[in-house]
Structure formats: C-alpha cells, structure tokens
Length: 353
Image (cartoon, rainbow, N blue to C red):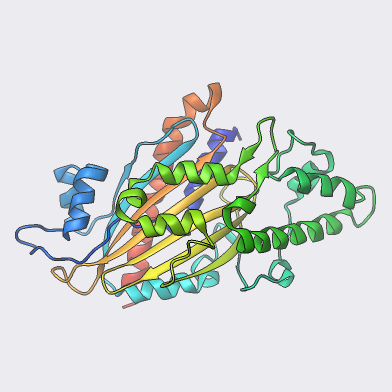
C-alpha cells in the first residue's frame, strides 16, 4: 500500500475513537430566536470555520457537519466537526474516563490505560507486529520502517541477539521497556522529552512538530490560551482544575498494526467541558496529532450539548511527488472518517438514555 494511501486509512482510525479538541468557551446566553447557537460557538462557526447557511441549518436539524480546515497540505490534515447530542455531558466524560472500554473492538486491538506513576507492568501486553520485528532486524539510523529515535534503534541492535531462538520475545521485552521509559520521561519532563524520529534521512523532532501544529490553531491561541499552555508546557503549565491520563493502543485499519501512546486531559466547569488528546508516539505514519473537543451546553435546545471537535495530525506521507496526487483523497477520507465518528458518538450516547 502506498505510504500516503496508508496514512489516509490510519488517519481515519485516529479520528473516531480517540479524543478531539473543542473550540468554544463560554456560557450560552442569546435566545434561540435571535441567535440559534450559543454566542461563542456562533462566532467560531461564522469566523473560524466559515460554515455556510446550509451547513448551519443542518447542524440545527441535528445532523453531523464536518469541514476541512486550512493547513500545510504537504504534511498536515485538519478537520472540523460538530453535532448536537441529546444526552448529558457527564455520560461522555464517563465514557472517556473508561478509555479501555470506550476504545475497544474493531480496529482497536488493545487499549491500556497507563498507571500514575507509570509502571512497567502497564506495557506487558504490548507486542510488535511480525512485520515490525522483521524490519528491526535490519533497521539503521535514517532507514527504518518503524518510527524510533536513534538511541532506541541502537538498543535494538545491541541488546537483541537476532540469531537467537528467542529473538522476537527479547525484542518485544525491549519495546515494552522503551515504551515505559518514554512515558516516564515525558511525565517528568514534558514535550522536551518527546522522540526525535530517525526512521528516514531527515530527523523529525516531535516536540517541534507539535508546537508548530498548535501555533496554527486559532481555537487555542485565541479562544483557549490556558489549554494551549497545558499542551505545550506540561507538566509545568498543567491546568490545576484539569485531570489527565495516558494510555497506549495497538490499532489496525486495513494496514499494518500501529502502536500509539496518547495523553488525554479533561477540564470541566459549569460552562463547558474541554478534552484534548495529544499523540506522543506512533510506530507508523504519524509524527504527532492533536484532538480537541468542546462539549458545550445549550439550555435553549434542552439538556444535551454541542459536541465540537477539531482534529489535526502531521505525517511524512503527504509530501513529494506521490503525496501531491494523493492529498485530495487523503483529505476526503479523513473528513469522511470524522463524519462517521460523530454520527456513531451521537447514536451511542443517545441510545444509552
């Protein structure tokens, strides 16, 4: 499967199951007759997303609406989505907190919440796919099919006897230790401890890619500066009223299985709830990703909430000659995945009433 095409399928998986970023902040105030959306959401839809009158009407009719956002198309895909959910906000927050149940089945092969503080036992179920183990036998700095930093690649060369009968078990045990050490280092030092991938000729600094991506998000720079600080300055800038946890997954979506590690933060107050999910590591396809979700009550419509999400992800699969021809397909498939995820979330929460 071409790399950019595979990235499209992986991006579809990144959207529906994990968390997203929310983009409105405030208290609903204007009446439904004069303004059918809460004021901050109305402003964002008009000036940030630039929804058409027809798209706004579809939202008011209870339909899910998505739209691609501006970004560097050679390395980034960004998509907005929103839908009205006729269910309590608490139901969604409880589902997210039980992440092992929330993201289980289908393309999610394994989902494990990581202890606080992290423990090596949290990663005991982590296994590298056979294709990754085969690749690691011959991986070199700047030429590897698995995304790893230089120190990790050298450890696979020096600590695993690839000619031994137990080579695969040893490699899996090393990957478990590396994941544990990576998460522990991040918890202690934040983004500065994120990986520098050496899977190709150009080193990729995950922290730099994350900051560049966040700086392109007016949802954070304009509307939610405290959330932006939390994302970029963790643990120093952590919001005192927020809760957070880390988890890892093995996912599969019509392509090679991928190991991912994410950091979820939830901030809840009487006006709204904001959830962010920051991708710290992915063994394939992604440099980093960020999902922002805002759950915004609207008493004029009833006891439910507006579910508003922005998803941005960065990858090396969209550049170059091949990427140029596949970008439009990637973007359309990612948007379709977002739409499917919104509909599924709405149905799941409303059925549970």
